[in-house]
Length: 271
Image 1: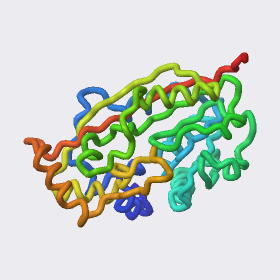
Image 2: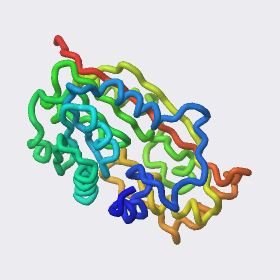
Image 3: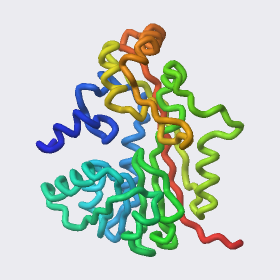
């Protein structure tokens, strides 16, 4: 970890793949680690001839690793501080084949700087979804690898804290997402789902984690009409007590987590 990572780790923690004092005291993957699978897939699809786009590159950990083995890599992120950290990391590691773009993946104006018909591989590691305005940047047989934080992530945290924003649907979030991607000409190669458990030492430890990783209670998939409500130590005190009471185990306070990893390929559609 570089010196500039220390403050970011304290502020962002797991949100940007940092370890910090608020990180879980133990994680049980039971032999199926989604992070390891994501690394394996990226290592498989990224080659010396690849031009890569990472949407939501965060603090640049993945971008800088991939830069060592690909022809060129572009990083897109809406957070100016994190994108600046990606630049610093690249400079410290001697990366010279990276280009950085500040902006949101779903903002056509922000993505105008991205070139047409350039990328062989696009990835999103717990970041934004692929958007229609990025289609022009893909080559004909480009691949897209995405790690998704599921709508059920942290279940039953959302229910206990009164943050169940969406009613149950007859279709799953996976079906909805894949249908939207199919309309863009992105068809699935594989879809993998992972359930694992994180454990926290005590109530204060879990509260620190919820404060740091606000997305646990304010999911990115949220109707614009509803306000985002991150963890509030005063208003959520009773809910935290209730959750701890029913989820304390010998290993600590249990939180069930969920990840999904999709591999999709671009296909020309004949209408």
